[in-house]
Length: 567
Image (cartoon, rainbow, N blue to C red; front, side, top):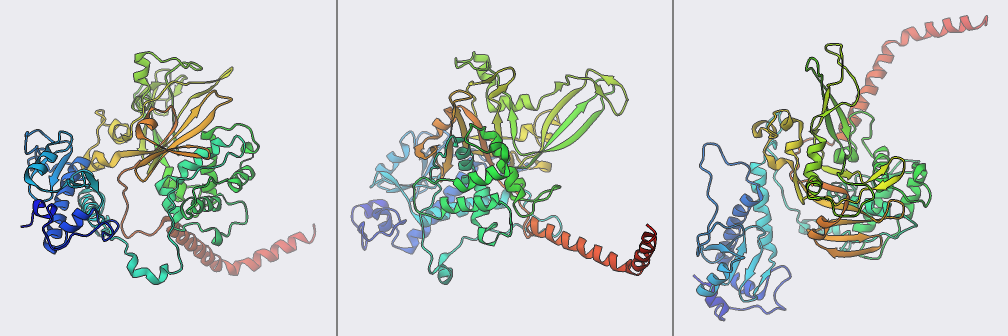
C-alpha cells in the first residue's frame, strides 16, 4: 500500500505540476496521491467516515435510540482526551485533535500526508502545511451529511400514502449544455451596496436583509414572479423585488446600485413613507412586507399562501386565566415579527448595572415575553361571568415561521421621543423550543420529541442584523449580513468584510434568524396552484347552480318589469 512517505518523497508514476492540477482538485501532492482508483476510493471512504462522525457534532443524527447505548465521544489517539474537533488521518485509522497539535505530530511521525476535519470536511496537507480544497471530496462530505439528515429527521413522510422523502439529486450541467448555450456565468454573490438617495438608509438596510434572506432569494431567483410576465397593471412591489434580485445576483458588477424605482413604488403605495424625511426601518419593513404580499401570487385575506406569509408568518397563542374560576381562554393571532422590550434607561449611553446587563439578552427578552403577566384592567370571564382584577395573560409561539424577525423597542414615544441605547446580547444560534406553546403548556419548557420532533427542529441561525447608530432624530442605519458563511457590514454604498464577533457585539435594532431544518411534504403541489383550483371549482359550482335556477329567472324579471311600469 502506497503511503504518504513514498508519495511525498517523489515515488510514484507521475507528480502533476501546479499547471497540470485542475481547479478544485486540491494541491499537487493530493493530485499525485489520488492517481490510482484504489487510493481515491480509500480516501472517499475515509471522507464518508469523517462526515458520519461530524454529523454527530452537528446534531444531524437526531436523538440517540432509547434501547441502544449512547456511543462515547471519540478520544485522541495520543492523550486519550475527548475531542471537540476530531481529525482523521486519511491513510490510517488514527484520530486525534487539531488544536493541541497531536494530528500534526502523527503525520510527522508516520510520514503520512493528509488528514480530514470531521466537522468541516476540509483536508489538511502536511507538505503544503495548509488546508486544501478538493471538489470531489467536498461533494462526498456534503452528500453524506445530507443523507444522514434525510434519514434521521422526522416528519419526512406523507401522512396519506406514506411515501418517503425524495432524496436530493445534485444538478449536473453536462446534461443541459444545449439549454445553457448562449448564457454567460457571472460571479453574482449579492455583495453590493445601495446608494443613499437622501436619508434612505432605513430602506437600504431592510433591502439588504431581503437580498440575503435565503427563502426570498430562492423564490425570486426561481422566476416565481418574473417581471416580464406580470399582469399587474398597478404598481407592483414584487416586480421591483425581482429587478433587485437580478441586479444583485445576475450581474458581475460590484458598483453600488440606486434603488430609485423601488423607492418611488413604495412612495406611491405607502404615502406615509413618501418624502426625504427620516423613517423608521421597522415601519418600512412592515410596509414592504404588506406591499409584497398584496402583489404576489397566492395572496388572500384568509390563510394566505403568498411568499411573505410562507416565509415570515407564524402564530401567537394568548392564554388568559380567570382569577376567580381558573378558566383559560385561548386565542390565536398571526404574527410577522416579534417586538421585544428592553431593560434600560432611555437616552442613557452609560454602561448598565450587571443585573440589567444580564436581563438584556435575547433569551431573557423572550422569557419576559412569554411569562405570565397580570392584566392591568378588569377582566370579564365568559365562563363564570364575574369581573376580576386577578386575571393573568401569557403569550407563546404556537407556530414558528421559517424566518424569525426580532425587533427591539429602542424608541420610546411618550412626552418626548427618546432612544434606549442599552446593548443587547444575542446568539448566532437560538433554539425556540422553550418558548413554544407545546413546551410552556407542559410546565417544564421542553417539547415531547415523539409528538413535536427533536429540539434540532427548533434551531434558528442568525443571517442578518440591523443597527441604529446615533440619536433618535439624527441617527443612521447600518446592517450586517451573512454571505456564503462570511459576514459583511453594509453602510449604504460601502460594503466591507467583517466577522461574526463584530456582528454580535453591535447594538442590534432588528435580528433575522432562519430555520436550520425545514419541514416539507413530498409530492405536494404549490399552495397557489391549490388555491387556483379551489377558485375554479367554486366558479364551476356557482355556474352549475345558476343553470339549475335559470327557468325561474324570466318569471322574476317579468314581474319586476310589470311592477316598475306604474312607478
